[in-house]
Figure: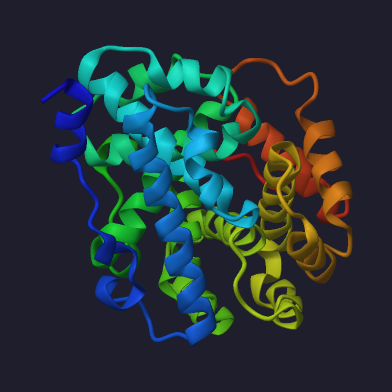
Amino acid sequence: MNLQSFILSRFQINLKNVDPNFRGFQPMSLPIKKRLKEIGLAFLYGYHASYKHSQSNIEEQIDIISDELKGFSFEGAGMGFAFMDICSNSSHFQKFISKEAKKHIYMTYIGSGWALAKLKFVNYKNFMNKLDPILKWLVLDGYGFYEGYFNTVRSIINHRIPQKFVDKYDAHAYMQGIGRSIWFYCGGDLYSINIVIQGFDEKFQGDLWSGIGLASAYANGIPIDKYSYLKDLSGNYYPELCQGVAFACEARRLAELPMDKTNHIAMEVAGLNAHDMASITLLEKRDLPSEDNSYEQWRRNIQKHFNGGKVKNEISK
């Protein structure tokens, strides 16, 4: 058995784990249940494709996946390549994001966070510090999503945060991923989402709404006309919600994925089309210094467009 096969056998994800019923998620309509299962299967397809990368490239392997869902396959492949690098001190992940996954870099970074959540003994900072100094925080977003998706009671119901993230900005990046997982846990039910978020410490609620914005616009799955209610439900965290939507728009634009649904969602939530939201994201990333707090500054710069130009109190680094 070669190393790649060994890693795959050690860290397999069973197909039933993408079934919302098996995960114990809240009751949801059949259409969104189908959508969430499709997303999970696309992820797993990309994850397993990473272990066959020497035989054919990822794009050839995931050609069977619809363009609408391809980003999730790159997320899964990101997890697989991160596993390989961590377990064998190789550079598969770096090569992947510099070539095939260059246009899917956001989702691929998030996928690597799944690997770090699975390998909790690994020094996550060592892995992150090899990555883009601004985008590296998406790794902890992926970490948070994994915990919310697979350890729902501990993370979403009991609000537990890994001790290594406490009292650092790391906890806020982690909570953005928890927010995305809440979209899945609640099956896109907006009122349930609002109730779940209100149970968290107020200092993290903005991060959670940011995650909801990203998940709702990238994964979607509910009728378009329902998205307008998100604005009212998010209340004071409306700028964070819009920033999450903007991230989703830019991720889909860069990857050249279908934008029709995301465009409608952006209009319903923020009153701007997806391309304008993506443009704001790119504009506010321009000229940011390569510092640890630049990611948060980027997010806040985007939020100003939806907050009358005002900046909220700074979050500690």
